[in-house]
Amino acid sequence: QVQLVESGGGLVQAGGSLRLSCAASGSGFYIKSMGWYRQVPGKQRALVADITSDGWPNYVDSVKGRFTISRDNAKNKVYLQMNSLKPEDTAVYYCNAKVGAAGVAYWGQGTQVTVSS
Image (cartoon, rainbow, N blue to C red; front, side, top):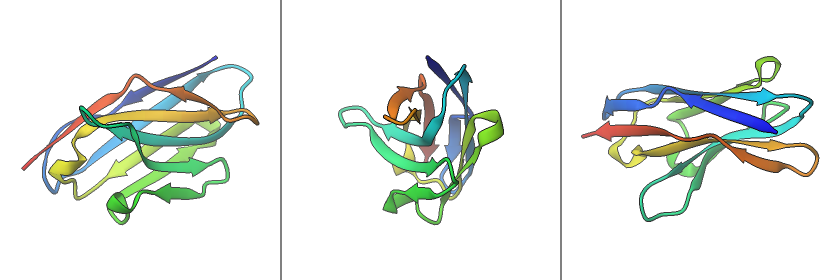
């Protein structure tokens, strides 16, 4: 079993920055990829960015050039640096880890990000 704990959400004005962190804990697991998803009321959870164990990032078009995902494999942590935030980035952000060869998905509890205009 893998547990994911997020931190770093909050309220920020448009144009500001926030950094999200996620730590994975458990034992005897291999994390294939880690990433961040976000969800707003009434909509499905959607990918924001993810990163492979080799460090290759992938971003949804709407955050390219503004968000940066990074990963510390030794600490089983993933980060999301969010710059130039916009009101439309407001959502609950969830950490995701795909574990093992089958890529079983685990989720954090979510952290609220609110961007005011």
